[in-house]
Length: 193
Image: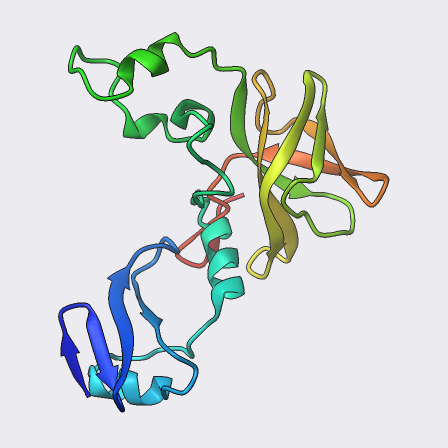
């Protein structure tokens, strides 16, 4: 086994390995055929392993706890970064021009990305309707948080709803109580809400 750039070859099978921060914590991301032994990859790369490999579901839960957007779910090419909690990524305060600046300056922002904490029993999932005093919104990512032992979500809702306010989420024809919170929900394994 040997590492070639970002490619890794084990028993003739191509795999990939790279350092990543997708979860808000330092770690390694590997992609490989099912026939490749993950323990052999880890041993061959001399990577210190403090935990077992995880799948995409666990990675998505950790991403959500860290309050990180997922392209195609929490944002896409039809959603403004200003409505996706990503205003910090664009500089509208200086005169510096960039591709898309004029479109951002002309856009009317009517929605915001917020965190939700479910107060009733249930699990928040993507595309569930969020009912607020200023109109309806939608959950973009939702799951049960193993760290908080509660269901959490990112949701795009109308402007004017602040952290601490109550909303309702429609789950299986029932309206369940939720609270708007600031995200991230968890940092370095510690609850932030």
